[in-house]
Image 1: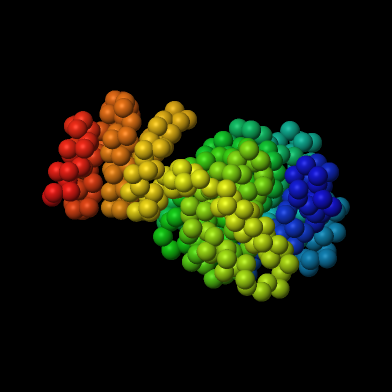
Image 2: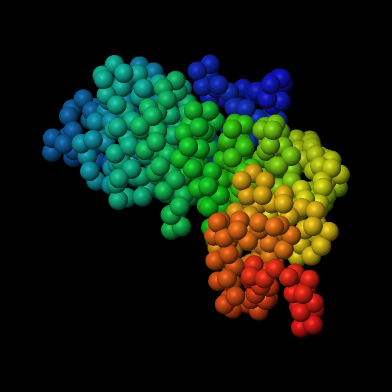
Length: 481
């Protein structure tokens, strides 16, 4: 059905509940794809899980050495030797005892191989039927035991399989039941997720991304992740070297989930980092699933934050998305959903192009952080008419130019930024004073010793404009040289 407020469809799928609302998606097929993506195993964790399932644990040795009690031994040993149907019946009849025994074994035993086995056992129980998360939640309530605390402490183990298998279980318990992670535990867990995404040597990135795919269907978790600067952590992970298409898909899927909240979408548009990385991946990726999720995310960014739709479209235009979308628009898609998304995004950007002023284009280019020698930079008419507009929004564009001079390693960007600061000073009476207060003058002067000749040249010209006032004389001198 169509939601009149959000212009999205609400689609029920396995795992939905009145407490945790069904997944919001732009199209029903997106919702189905979303659900499948949260349960389909990927990466190293799934491969190692298969090996763990083939192992056997000598439970008798544990009870004989009095490391576990008879009750827990009987429960786990009986369950371990049964087939799937019999296991289901035991869980129906003795679910409380199963939860108790699993948590007790995790607390009492220390051998990595055994802990691995118990965790895979728990994960299989939950994956086979998501409603079984209530077994653990109800046990915890009845016995005043924090299931979260019992699991979260395992994130500190040295064995990385144990750590990441635990994380998947926590994410499922937090997403599939009526009991949400308490705020303190939630912040701890999401901070761990952020740290794991930031670790380029982490071999379990797929399972970390899967945790977010599971949890960020819920508004409260999206809010918490956003407050921890989660958007930037996902963007940084996408920018890491050698990111495969599957991980790309999962991480962009996370951005797609975040883009359903208008307030978060606004921040995703601001600064343009999200749009830039999506545009770059869209140009390079040949995988339809990656294209699908990028276009869906772009559509959300254009439609969700109503007051930011112009800024979003400007950013997409500046990131050179129109030529890419033109190719996708002319392509024949068997999937109606992706065809619809491509058409919507392409048509909205085309409409916006017709309304753009020259200054809008310039502002969008500066905000994108990707300066190039487009005609506007060398236009005397542009600077004469628009130099003072760089003062708008508390010198927003000038601050961005200053930031680019400080952080960019691209010679073209540095050269253009230096040139623009000089033109601003040349056409604005108080320009020199403004740039000094913003710290821009110092940044431009440093560029005079840059190893790239074009950067040195533009920096020198800009500094000359900062230092002298007879612009007409200076112009003649420069032409003479």
